[in-house]
Image (cartoon, rainbow, N blue to C red; front, top):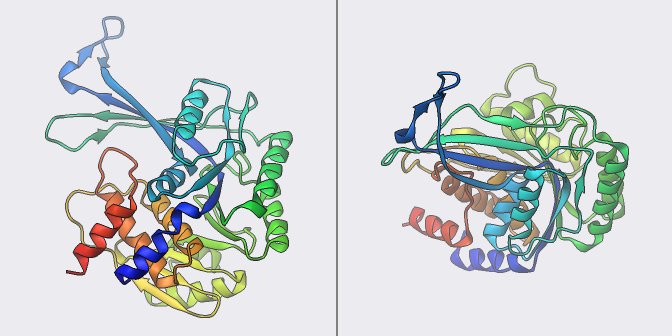
Length: 342
């Protein structure tokens, strides 16, 4: 990617309007000082003393954080939070971010706020060490009335945005935002607005998704292709092309240490290797960073290979940020691309 093209694409970011529909959660980090360890008088069990608490949007909020870091002009989260303390923290964190508009984000007493609580041992001179995570989730189907409000919000935004990202973070079907009813609404939306770019990612399955751009790993590609075993690396490209033609949209396959591959409905295939590791890494959040960067780049007019290069570089930056679910700014991406081409 030439410096001129990098500038041309990324300069368009501040004019983009992107919506993110999905499962927003609160990432709450509890920083523990091991030097203050003690035993409980009542139980005799070890006590971890928390000396700092920090929170940030997680799940679909991690994609949003990456869009903010890229300087996207306007971002619309479409989702919900409970009327609880975690929901207050999540909404406050989202609303404080530049460019974020909260009119499509719903507070409801019918759900609790999806929360990842992450205790971290903070020892000077060492990387943070995460203890067992404490999760708060919803285990019942999303109420029909809430689904209706989410669909209405998405339909209202569809003609006003350059792209919509779908992010399914929940493990139990129909307990989050991206329900079968919501996907039917997206299918109808794509028929009404065929040029609207929709990028989808799901930690559960992309099996029943409408014809939109899909981002997945090799195991998920194998399932979509009806394979009982992992698609061999040499067959990932042809398999992704077949899927892209079926969907009439780009498909992106992350390949861990083998990099990332993109396929277009026209039969085009591009693959880039992972950038060299530059120290200790933490892969948490890398996939969401890729989703955000692919969407922003394509919405800004990047070619397939250009979008892959931007996303691949951003992911390399994020995995080197320890103890947090990191993001990559345009300045950081530019600096690393420049360093790699020297």
